[in-house]
Amino acid sequence: MDNKPFLKMYMDLKEAEEIKVTKEEAFEKLKELIELTPYYVYDFEQGYYVLCGKLDSHYAVKAYNGEVVELSEL
Image 1 (tube, rainbow, N blue to C red):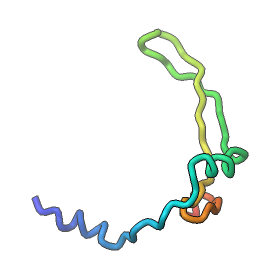
Image 2 (cartoon, rainbow, N blue to C red):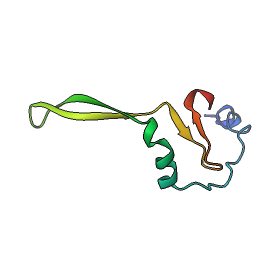
Image 3 (spheres, rainbow, N blue to C red):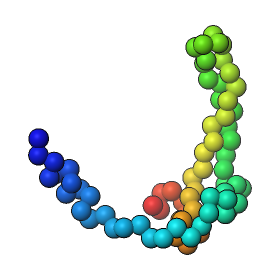
């Protein structure tokens, strides 16, 4: 099997810039933009539904400059 077409897809990618923002700093910037939605999930081992939560956000923090952007912009 020839993997050249597969490798060709990655030739245009650029090397990532240096990370300057810690996970803790990124969380502080995003914590007001995070949504927690209650969800019930069926646990097959226990045989009943368990209350869980879906953690989601439409925003991200750029690791090289700390800018908060919408995911649709990436």
